[in-house]
Amino acid sequence: MPASPSTARVINDRLALRLLQSEGPLTAAQLKAMTGLSRPTVADLVERLQESGLIRIVGEAGARRRGPNARVYGIVADRAHLAALDVRTQGVSLVVADLLGATLAEASLPIGTDTGTEPAVEQVAALLEQTARDAGAARLHSVGVGVPGLIDPDNGELRDSSGLPAWHRRLVAALQERLPARVVLENETNLAALAEQRAGAARDRDTFVFLWLGHGVGAALFLDGRLRRGASGGAGEIGFLPVPGTKGLPSASDCGGGFHSLTGSAAICELAQEHGLKAPESAGPGAAGLVAEAVASGQDAFLDVLAHRLSLGVAAVVSILDPGCVVLGGEVGLAGGAELASRVQDRLAELTPLPTQVRAGELGGAAVLQGALLTVRDRAQEDVFTQGA
Image 1 (cartoon, rainbow, N blue to C red):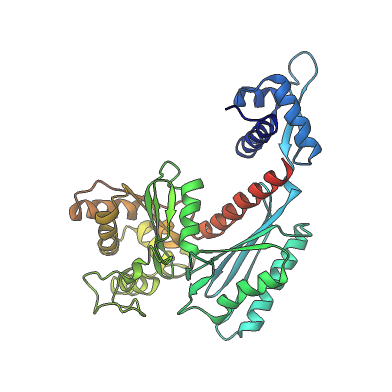
Image 2: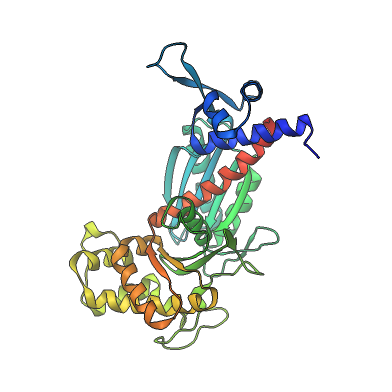
């Protein structure tokens, strides 16, 4: 049974909007070619979308040919404004963007361990509001927040914040109370994996495992194009994985003795000290700086041990999921680059019969913000396009 005229119009409008979102500004002729719709149908949908305030003329094309120039249409990017926050134990980074995801303003705020819950929450909320004003965003449509803790899949709330500052849990509730915007909470590793899948090292993969290497260690699972969270939202808590080479076993409340004990930031710094490795200030702080220096100066012994440690956890995940690809992300993954990834892949080939590519992440620590922005951009576009089309 064919679609009714009204349903067909909605379908055509959404198709055109998706093309304008993914391809950028287009002429009516280009829309006709890409959609396969007739010229009158495209003319009608362009008129409808202009009248609804979703698209506008952004330029002209065809200046080098005879006849009138073709109008170029683009999405009205300031139809909605978005924000993304990367919330870590030591502070917050944030961006404010338009409906297309273009960054309009950004800011960061360190928060000391001695800062109380309410002062910390007030500082972050005030910074977000000020950054939005600086971006010319009178009202935010959606705010995406990336946090280190586990997210309850049933209600989207922070479920396990053990080991995190108290202000983390309070922050989301405060933003929801204070802002006339939808606030979306997500685990930082999942967001980073989404960013690498959409705009980084896993662009060509719909099945892969993302390993976050930063202050701690975590994993995200993309299987058949979908992020898998697990029954309780804890899929990827690889820091608790028992592995050889630690001084004990992890417990339900402490990942000490697990994979975290070999590959967390503190463990990498200890390993560097054992190898007499020191990083100059130019290499960057902490574990990432040490790994970057090891790669730059050819510290083979250190890199081999680190690759061996990483391969222990990766091999366990690969043996169960057979993802075909593992991305080493976060600041440490970016610092190690192709050199560290290659060593992990070689060691992995000795531990599992399943062929697996190991790639270096391309986005580093910035992946969390990018993933949060992509998440709220997609949802905001769905809302705006549905309401306006």
